[in-house]
Image 1 (tube, helix red, strand yellow):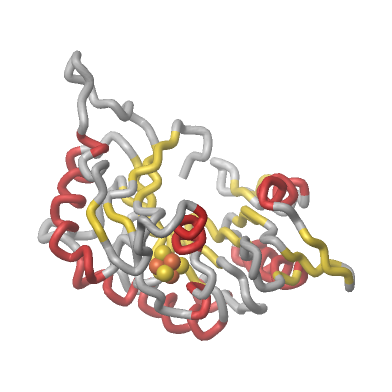
Image 2 (image 1 turned 180 degrees about the horizontal axis):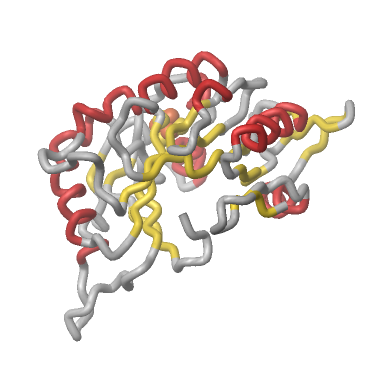
Length: 254
Ligand code: SF4
């Protein structure tokens, strides 16, 4: 997946219910709390922006230009059961916009096959799914399922990282990227830098691209706990210089 393409956020629905330990301080709940009590985070509602990917300008061209990456459903979980009646329309928009890449994360990969449209086949070529895992139990449960799914693009998201994880059984050439991040927010749990390095080493061993996307609010490194303010969590992760990429020739870019 290209990180240089123009990107857009599309949130067809809002709200979600908590399913696993990584949900404890869910950012959707935290953001809603920041904006007051108008939104009930556990109530899943369809957004006014529902048709955003197929909206057109006056000249009839799409508002979202061809070649864009559309980050999908970041204020909910795309596979949440409460959105089952809306998802067919969402898939249809993705199919119509085959000129854009849609990328969503989910903690409900076990629902995936119950949620696919009839013409899914081996997967739409313009959809990338990130299977989110936060600890070893969730990695073992979700990635075993993920490995079997018909998808053209797969990523593993280790976030919020809550403990050391062994992903080696699940790292193969079908995984386009492993992205790791610590937890944000006032009550965030500590992320140990050694856990991050450990996953990176697994990715290098299997030649799977790796990205450290954010430090989280508390990072344990060399025996010291660092408090990292929200605005620096992405840049500090990038400064750690851990990203591992594979070139077009299939060789690592070190
Ligand atoms: S699945 Fe994602 S969006 Fe839903 S409660 Fe958990 S962290 Fe929040």
